[in-house]
Length: 594
Image (cartoon, rainbow, N blue to C red):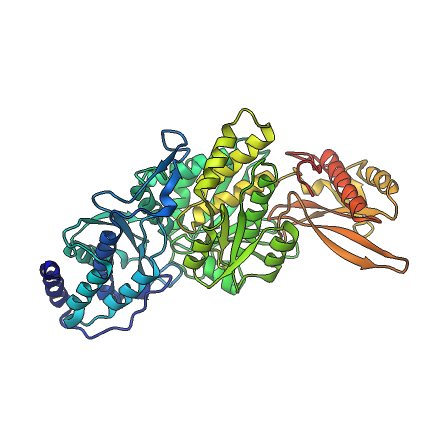
């Protein structure tokens, strides 16, 4: 290991100059990297710079199977093609993000990003812990042991891409990180203040030669806004409005910039806690999820749709009030269910098969698991807690959806899925419905961050899905009496329902308007089946529940058999669509309404 001696001596001199001789530490590298009070983190960050330089050398020249045949982005010229890529550039790049996410402002942290934008692999987590905790006297020995174990050549170049969130301590820690990386022989590229998902995006772009996208802030914003409009090409009847709590973190600026490319006729965002207040102080996704209450700084009425990011914008949860003023939460489990439902609906329209799966942990809501498995028929895999485990398992499906309940998650589209969707979207020999479904899913693959959970891209995904789910222009058109059993508005709707009910044995149906509540989308409405006994015989009941986070009209129908109940449900829904001012596709069996 003589080749490492000069490098190691330089590290030892610098560390002693800054901190003197320090004993062994007790830091632990976990899913979130290292975190601590910022004033205790200096030596650890310096050594993570060293680790990143070593890790970059270890990835140089390696071909990753997930890069094989990675399609070019639709938003990067030239158009779609399958290419074999490898990390064989003269200087492979890894990323380092300085952030403590939802922790209070006095904390900070640091974590390493793999070349495709994923979390650091397990073996190198162990190396990180050893290196961070080595005493000053054993630092050189530990560096040499890691280099030997990984088979590293000190003469190889390496590159470290870094960014930080908007914590006051970030700039000082950045200087320590750069010092450690450069002393270990790495070239550093500082992207400044970014969200964590943006840095993951940059690393992936650099290591795929720009095929995932342009490795710039503008490239990130352009890709997301373009993909959003590809996913929602037609202007909706009225723009959606979302109030976004950015936790006074870096996500506020990112959301504002990406909305510069999203046309206001499609979506409007009202930013709250946009960075002018104290980071994560009674706001942000973790505060909302843990406390089951709204963040400070967000004023909203019943029916207003709101979302919260965490401090570095890699988590998102939605919330609102129902008409009784009760707080309601749409967490990661429900966002995953919404995404899986939308994807499942589009896949049903395609002439080829792609595997779809949802990945959860033991902490997932059991209702969401039952919904996915029993009602949608989508397989659900369970992994150990930790994003890296969910991400790895999700990658085993053609399309893998994963979200932790805390709102951290994304949707992964494998190379096979992207290629087949891209081809079908342009295939003049298939039906318009097939082309549209393939186009929607391919646009979705470009919109959602393929490297890591991303609050900004996840919000745009949810909003795009909800725009597709809007069917009634104004739910308040529907008015009922007699304890919601008789519809008095719009005119003619109750008579139409009565006629339909009379045509079915042992049938009944009614409708009601419904303000936002919990909700798992299935097409426009979600059907669950319940077997009910009465005094004469058994019969099946089809019960329609409210969908998503949009105001909807709820339809209830039952009949003597399941087939008749399904038929009545579609017929009544179609009448509501016609008479209450529906938008989009009329509910039918052929468009997978049921």
